[in-house]
Image 1 (tube, helix red, strand yellow):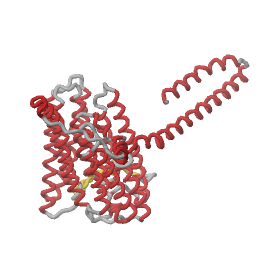
Image 2 (cartoon, helix red, strand yellow):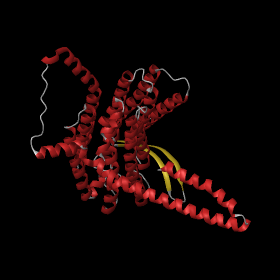
Image 3 (cartoon, one colour):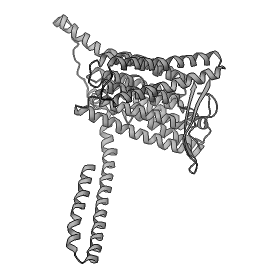
Image 4 (cartoon, rainbow, N blue to C red):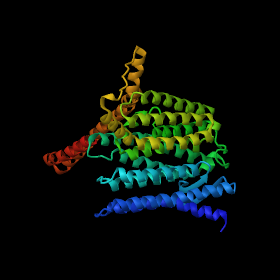
Length: 475
C-alpha cells in the first residue's frame, strides 16, 4: 500500500464518519425509547475522534511528501444523459480544505463536550444532537467539496440545522419566528447559489471546481472563463456568501439567531457557519484574479459590513448579540482580505477568529454568573460605570442607526418582501378569478346539455368555497 492509498483510505474515513453519526442519531430519534445522554455523548466523541485523527494524518502525510492536492472521487450519484447533467460527488484535500476540516472537527468536538453538560436533563437533548450531527456532516461536506454540487449539499445541511437550532425552544413564539426569518434569508442565498451552479454548468459543462479554477492547486489556479462570466458567477456566489455570513444587506438576522442554545450560537455564529461564506469566496478566489471589478465589490462589501457591525456591536444590551456582531466585524475584514488577494492571511484569520469566538461564547454564561455572584458578594462597594448619553446630534443619529441595525430589516421588508408578497397575492387573485370563470363556463355547458341549470349551480358552490378556503390558508 503506497502513500496515495493511505490518504485515500483516511479520506473516506473523514468523509463517512459524520454521515454515520447522522444516521445513528436519526435512527435513535425514530425509536420510542430514547437513548441515554451518556450514550449520545460517547457516540459524539467517537465520531469526532474517528474523523479528526485521519484528517490530521492526511495533513502530516501531505506535508512530509510535499503533496498539495489529493482527490477522493466516490463517483456519480445520478446522471441525465439527454441533458448532459450529472451530480458528481467529489472531495478534495488541499491547502484550504484540510485546515478547515480539522478546524470543523476540533470545534465541533469541543462544543459537543460542552453541550453534553450545558443541556443536561434538557427534554430536547436528542433533538439538539441530531441537529448537531447534521451540522457536522454539512461542514465536513462543504469543507472537502470538489464540485459545486457537493458544496451545495453541505451548504443545505448547514442551513437547515442552523434554522432548526434557532427555533430549538419551539414552545415560545419568538424563537420560531426568528428561525423562519433565518431560513427565509438562507433561501435567498441558496437561490443565488443554484443560479451560479447552473451558469457554471452552462459555461464549463460540469460543476467541478477544477474546470472553473484551473488545474493548479489552491490558490494558484487560474480561472478558465471570461471576465464577464467571472463577474456574473462571482456576484451570485457573493450574494450566497452574504446571506450565509450575514454580510450587508442580510446582517439583520444575526441577532435573531441568538434565540438558540448557547452551544449552537457558538458553533454557528461565532466559529464555523458564519465563516462558511468566506470559505466559499476562498474556494472560488481565482475568479477575483480574472475580474478586478468583482474584487472591488468583494472588498467594498467586506469593509461596509465590518464598519456597520462595529457600530451595532457597541449598542447591544446582551453579551451574545454583542459577540455576534463582533464576529461579523471580523468576518467583514476577512472578506476584504480575500478581495485584496491575501488568501493565506484570510485563512489564518478564520482559524484564529473561530477559536477565539468559540471560547468567548462558551464562556459567556459563566461570565455573567460570576459577575452576578460578585455583585451579590460585594454589594454597593462594587463601582458601577456611569452610563454616558450621546452628547451631540451626530452621536444620537449614529446611536439610533446602530440600534436599529442599519434599518436593514426595514429596507428588506419594504422593498423586497412586501412587493414580492404583493405579486404572489395578485397571482393568487388572478388564478381564483380564472378558476371561477372556468367553473362558470363548465356549469353553463353542463346545464345546456342536461336542461337543469339549478343542479349545476348548486354543485358549483362547494368548489368555490374550497378554492376560497385554500387561498386563505396560503395567505
